[in-house]
Amino acid sequence: MSRSVRWAHAFVDRPARGFARACDFWTAVTATSLSEPRGGDGEFVTLLPKGADACVKAQAVTEGEGGAHLDLAVQDVPGFVAAARERGAETAAAHDGWAVLRSPAGQLFCAVPWQGESVRPPVVAGSRLDQVCMDVSPSAYETEVAFWSALLPDWSARPGSRPEFHVVEPPPGLPIRILLQRLDAEGAVHAHLDLACGPDIDAVRARHEELGAVLVARHPHWSVMRDPTGGLYCLTGRDAETGGLPRAGSRATGPTTDR
Picture 1 (tube, rainbow, N blue to C red):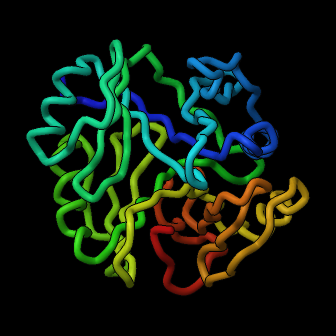
Picture 2 (cartoon, one colour):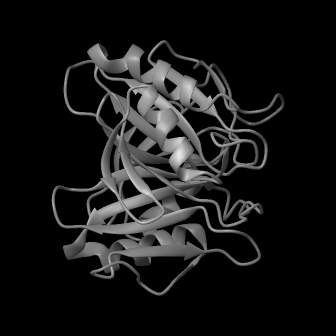
């Protein structure tokens, strides 16, 4: 049980200079309200849904342009940290009761105590923020796939619908999944958020644009967006209820992808 992840949070990491604007956007997208700030500099907030448990948080960062990361909630934080280190992770920072870890490719993630969360937030206006996509360089990709597959043995790790994708899907009821994406060129690992939108990507995109987002690139089954503070994220054609590929009989046509 020490290694069992009982809940997961996707973190929206955005520069402190535009953090309030980022919070306004992401609370609107997810139909949530903000918790009181916490942390030494008030840098952490939780996006609180109505009638469900939170699975999205936000952090103001003072260095870099931000991105995304995972918080994995477990009953035994030291045991989980030890298991992660055995499989190639490093401890980036140890805190009282929780830890920041670094994957073999360099992706930061956190091990935190499980607080009894169990109720997943619903689909909001046709979409659900449900995936953290880690963009990994070619030389580090296979090692990173092996790391996450071994660290999360209760999750389903499988090749994606395209050769550059690998899906790490949680057991039913957990709110956040992982997509590993192999990049075409070498570079530092980084992560972004994905929202499942079913066949209505264009409708969701229009709503996001009304809230201040900008379309960066349109692909057959996903769109790359930039939020009002410059953070990249994707709207995908996956089923918003299940997180998987569109179900038979949906309005999606042709081959699709795990994006």
